[in-house]
Length: 154
Image 1 (cartoon, rainbow, N blue to C red):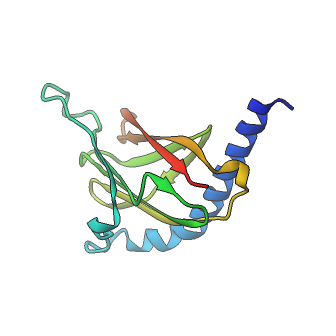
Image 2: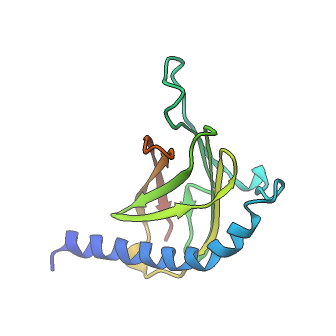
């Protein structure tokens, strides 16, 4: 197996582990979806990516307004907190990383949140950049994307 194939396989393993961890956490987040004050403290998000919105944009298109993470450099094991602020017409948000897709639960209209603990990873999976591609969708299938780089520390 060549080095590139091994790196892709390792990245997928990392994401599958993260997906397993988020599957365990998602039911507790779903219970908070109806609570209006269940949002995470803004101080928790130190890596904020604001997305400029074109004034002439079609108002029926979904918009990602802001992507917030607890840090740009994440440790494994360690926390991962994500908040996506969207236009009110967005019905679902997904993150795509290295060929894997994970849903981010709705916290309230226009706000999607996920908080998980990243598992311990082998050293060869650390010290790398990953591109988190966030995708927002409306109920009629319109979509938009934004990419956010994240680094897993050694």
